[in-house]
Amino acid sequence: MMEITARNIRQWSRLGPRAVYGLALAELIGRDERVYALSADLGVSSGLGRLMAEAPERYLNVGIAEQDLIGVSAGLAKEGLVPFASSFAPFITMRCADQVRMNMGYMHLNIKTVGLSSGVSVGGLGNSHFGVDDVALMRTVPGVVILSPADCVEVVKSVEAAAAYEGPVYIRLTGEAGTSGVHTDDIDFEIGKAISLCTGEDVTVIAAGSMVRVAVEVSGRLSDRGIGCAVLDMHTIKPLDVEAVRRAVERSRLIVTLEEHSVIGGLGTAVAQTVAGGDVRPRVMTLGTPDGYLKNGSYPYLLEQCGLTADAVTERIWDALQE
Image (cartoon, rainbow, N blue to C red):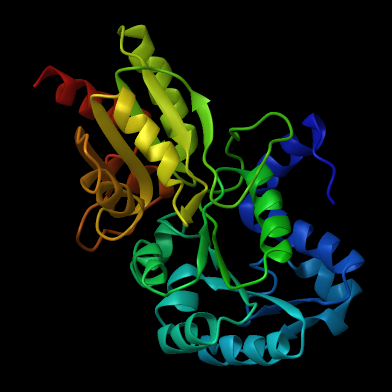
């Protein structure tokens, strides 16, 4: 297992989620002969350059054909191997939706898929590459675990957890290189168990992926205004930590979900469904990308346009509390 130290964490933050995924997978392959890396002609983009050079027999490139990528992964899984297949988020979910539905869902094969640059971090490539509806699709596939790591520490933990889990997993990578992380030390990471990062009795922000760091910053800003804001790092979107959501509902007058994903079908929808099924129903505010196509632009520009900056989220929550 990769050593989690302050030095490594700083280095991983500079490298970014994709590169750290490649490092974690290479380390895993070095000690587990069952694990294979696959991509749809995106080995370097997946952070697998070193693995491709040093252990080419453990890397399979199927070409620009995500349907084949899932099919080949299914064959490996049927033989008792553990395939990790990566491509850009919309390609490895929507482009091969039928293969995902049948091989990962219906057949429940032990396939691990990785969505590169989910959200809007590849801003210059436009809507064809934005991964803002991948969770909505994958949530509908029975039996698929969805992991959304908050930072590079959780990327490492997600790879380890996915490999140890017997069943299909989708890992959603968000954010970009050079972004400060959330965790400064090792963490207890368990599939289906949220991590509490901040405490507060007025508001609970339930965040996933890149937005966890934003949520922590928002909590501090609200605290300066006398508002207690709890933050839950919901690194597992499916299965959702229902008990953590229910505890938040009992103590908070406002529940806010925050994700780099469409406001339709993602974490916000999962949380709202949980709240609606309980006896206590505080207001739920779902923050994410709007229901529409976005303009091309830099990553910071797109986050600003979507209202996913700490400034914008703080003001939205503050205004909601004044109503």
